[in-house]
Image (cartoon, rainbow, N blue to C red; front, side, top):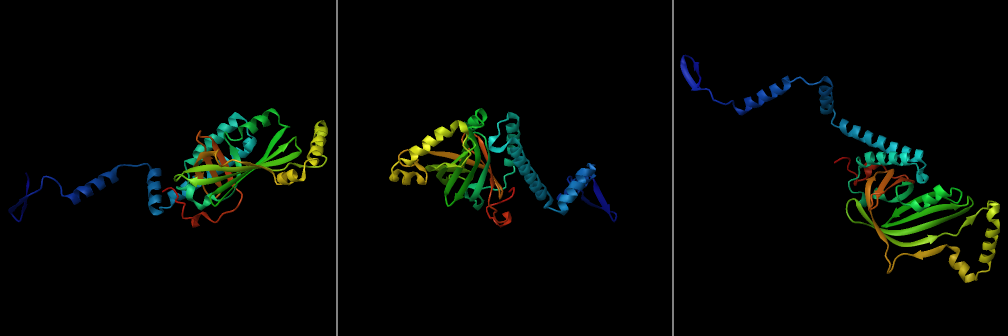
Length: 287
């Protein structure tokens, strides 16, 4: 063990191991001496100077992914999309969007309430899609809206038959949170609205059948006419309870994405403007 001589007298022997402070300074100087790529050093300096840079970049990535998803849905034809390549493109964009979900507890977030428009459905309305593909002149989906308010949801499906007869089916459900991401939907009732026919729009091939139907409807008793004037109501509650579970995989102020137990997604966009996101305490960006 070496000793240090001070003033001609031998001093205490030097320690075999450096003291902690010196050891830390040695490690820092060693790491600093390791050459790093210029781009990496610049990135580290920028993040140290502005901690919100990474958060801003993440937000821009989320907005870009959301816009790409909506564009892919519109380009594929929305609810009437049937091209396999276009559907795969939508599914790919969906994965990117769901990875950046900014709302950690969407089932209890105020953002869930409001009026939504169904832009695309993976498996729902499959029977309608088959009819549209096989008989495009027979049936078309004009739109699907969903209003969520006070623990209830009302979905309205607007249909057009033979390009002339318009009707709608309204489904009312109770919704309850089963967890941060999981919802349970219990069906209450369904209503088939009276058909609306524009004068002169009936195809000549079915004009005779339509006239016979109208004449038969006029011969119905007044009590029956009054009961169906507001639509045909189909109770779905009671002893036979219909329900399904949903998983909210993405929610912000503009877009809602839900998946059913099979994993089939539904993409909805908001029709009503909500307050700024920053005012919503339920949103915690990338925590």
